[in-house]
Image 1: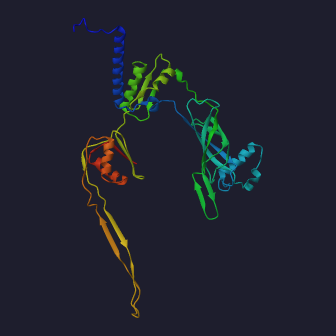
Image 2 (image 1 turned 135 degrees about the vertical axis):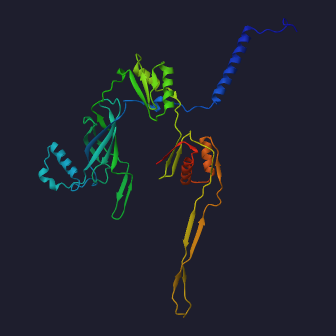
Image 3 (image 1 turned 180 degrees about the vertical axis):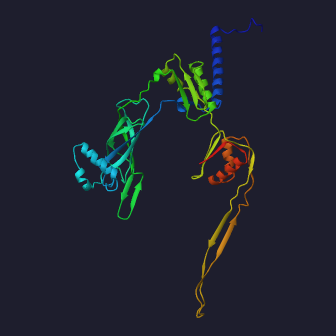
Length: 385
């Protein structure tokens, strides 16, 4: 068959064939992308904060009233008595000449704390925490009277008042008592009203800094690179493991911050092993590596069992009944334990599987990790708490 005799594709058929080939190539590429391991990328807003934008702590002193006989004892809590007398005087009730007769048990002196969020506006409400200051035994059901909340500069930024909830249960009888939770501390949701704002003009700052919550130089460099790719070269620069400086120049500050906080980067973490000896907790990071090392672990266990026996004399033998001691001592030196080998440069999953294969508990594993670190085979920072 000559080329003149071969069938020719029309322009429509040729376009359909090209389209089919394009779809096939796109499908193969998408499958390859899906098959690739996904990196644990997180948003910048979840690993860094804009320096200067933070909460401010507030504190105040107040009185809780309406308690069911579980308040402070005025004879021993002098500050509660004086606060009660001062409050009544401000309300037009004079009780100073009858101070000795004040015997109420329904009032408690408390400390009130709160966190003032950044950019909180006048009239907005915040949660507060209330804690007993005297010898009150239960604050459940009490009402916090008007309490001004002060910041470190001594100025009043919020005023608190409301019904207190502790989430605790306390019951007492003549010979027994049951307490669940902490009845001397509670919270009031939306219990304070902001009366004074913290003046921050974010839009007027063309230069600012990001502070990493977990300092790491590699993560700081990745954040700077991601910001420069999105907003333009020269906007971000990593100064140190904790700080990334930003220079928005003539750019819109609010729009730039909103865009950069949604950017995703892959944070890099140091290899750390955290050990809590009190609870036997072990936490290892993903980058922890162990060089090849051989381990043999065995416990010395000594069991002493006392089983005294009573010896009765024979009839009419004029003997006395005596106790004969019987002691049984067992020693287990772990002689059946074998020498195990931990292969080097393994993943966290393989490392955990290797440690579990030794058949030891968390307490023994703590000693093993400390010994591996002492031998120089643990390529991580060991933190014991």
